[in-house]
Image (tube, rainbow, N blue to C red; front, top):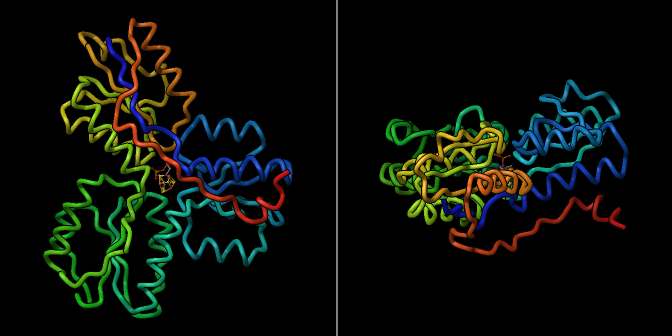
Length: 314
Ligand code: 10D
Ligand code: SF4
């Protein structure tokens, strides 16, 4: 059995930064450091940080006064930010800068009195944060579009004052279909200068496309609540693989590998490389031989830490 190891895979620059922010806060202020929502959607990451003194909560009312709180990489609404400021909490914002960019777009379109269509998945924390960045006091509204059917039906105030933005971790192909339908109905619709789907999402999907040409089975290391990881599994399945989303090596069923000559392995942007290496070890124990595959795209994106943390760097 050949193990085809996707390149690129795993941690992106936004996840690296978010985890480092929690670790630095623990070093600078000591435990407990509160984190609103899983800093990234991965159990191993969250458990490791919890061990070091991070306390994960879903809402700010679970954070005591005078505490330090970190917003997760997925971002928060304006209301959450305002509430933290009103209470005088000491905040570090681990929102990925590429999510913040979408927040700023939404904010700008709202101030222009436009309606905004947000392509994304209902209930996801990034979508909640981005929807909550739209200020309705300028007369516009923000609507969520999940499917081509939504794009066919949505009604807007004025097609000449309309913009579209997206969640950062969507399927590139599905989003193209939805955006095309919207553009067909609303040709004057404004779009951001640069794609909202981020470089890491795009690169990991391209790598899976290339692997799926050879692999019969695809293992995607990632959590069930991780949007970008789910999109990798779906894509591999669409391309004809038997594709599984796994938290770790222990979840691999021997049945999945029976009569398999090529197994692809990739990891979502929130899945640590240690989990990938454990999967490889397990597959090698079953007789697999590893080779790197995928597009081989080198990622050189690095995001700065917040200023207050940069200053504290030894
Ligand atoms: O669910 P998801 O793909 O948005 O988040 P995850 O924590 O799995 O990966 C990092 C991506 C972020 C923070 C969204 F930009
Ligand atoms: Fe940022 Fe993209 Fe990573 Fe999300 S997946 S944290 S948008 S780089």
